[in-house]
Image (cartoon, rainbow, N blue to C red; front, side, top):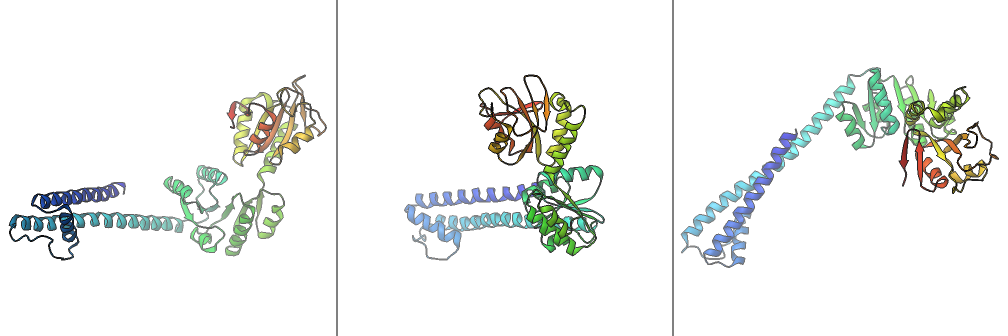
Length: 360
């Protein structure tokens, strides 16, 4: 396809250059025959447009001019047709390719049965698609972002561009033959609408829905979701489990374990970070409760590492006073942690386990 488009583009470029060259030669010939530049340009214009107006200068005494004009009319017409042909070819091939691509996509989805439908191809959707691909489970991706779906389609995935809350879109994804539907958009309201639409189209489909706000869980259940996933709750529960484990100190000492844990958290948009409290930090000497208020929402302090004695305080109380040199183990959304770090550290750097990252 790229070769054909390149060929049509070359035709357009070559035809345009030849056309411009012939026009310039014609103006030069007419001027050398004693015509003014304006008359020469006028003659070129009426010749290439074939309007049939009278010649600006009598050429009866200049037979070579008439012969050249005849040749110029033929050549300019051929060049024009060549350019138009290239344009038509480019449009036709583009439309043909899109039509064939859509037909192949529709045929591929039509052959699926017992597949999964992924609604939303953001960060979570992309990871979900990757894992399903590894498990060998067929799936169709539904999203409004054509650029994201182009990348997925280029990788061999079946995609449908459209709003997953609309019946036509889910029908195009083969919901009547699907076994699972996962709606993983970051918008809770959209996930509720998609769940309602999916349940209405197929009562026995297994729906897994993502929720950012815990209050949305009940709405999703009433809408017909079989399972609800709350990323923040999953991450917090996992960290609490690690902290309660006898070897919880590995959270601060074992880079490999923490890296693996952060990779898992990353699949749901979370990170665990160690935020040092330097001497010049505004948080030094203040109770932990004030840090939580100053940092805003989007994070959870799960442990405090004392510099003075190396102790790890799990689930520190709000009245605990922070000391210079202490470190906070924090779980939060990727966008929230840098904000807290900037408040805690004068150099505006947040140190993830095993790596340092500048958030400026």
